[in-house]
Image 1 (cartoon, helix red, strand yellow):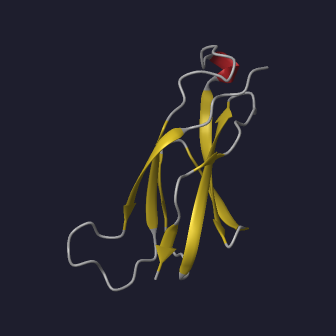
Image 2: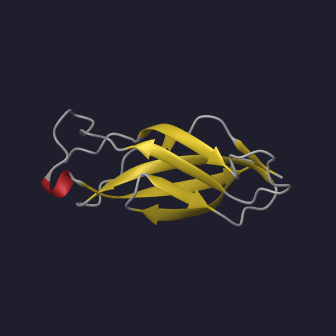
Length: 110
């Protein structure tokens, strides 16, 4: 059974985009583009269709938490001060999970 391709093209929006920035940011929003094919090039249909995405975040390379969403945008709130990295995977209806996509860069929460 083919695995779905990993999501790509993240877009970040940290805190309030209007100046001046808030004195303390405790959350981030991350978006990605949904894959359109499996790793073998076949269509994402039937049991290979995307069921949901798993977004995980890490601090100092240690797993912190994850969430599941059916959307290609997720907001992570309640983050303690620190530097975070994020990965996202696509999970097909049949349970096959894509390789994790490392969201470029890291986000610093003050």
